[in-house]
Length: 90
Image 1 (spheres, helix red, strand yellow):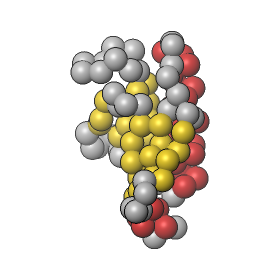
Image 2 (cartoon, rainbow, N blue to C red):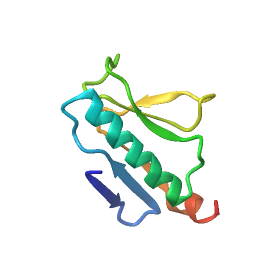
Image 3 (spheres, rainbow, N blue to C red):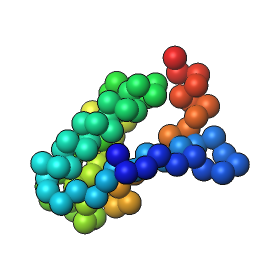
């Protein structure tokens, strides 16, 4: 994981994955980031995952809240999580 940032004057944190040079490296980064967010209290259905050929971005990274929801191609390699939600989702 490259960084976790707390947004000033808010209750959000940013989880950003390291830049990956290969698809295999991206898959490993996604597995670690997914383990981290699950430990933080994010639902087990949510996950980071890698795709070799993105439609709109130049990264391997995607994020989804569940297999039944949509997904986001992570051009900036990360996403925000709300601390209030995480703190109340124990």
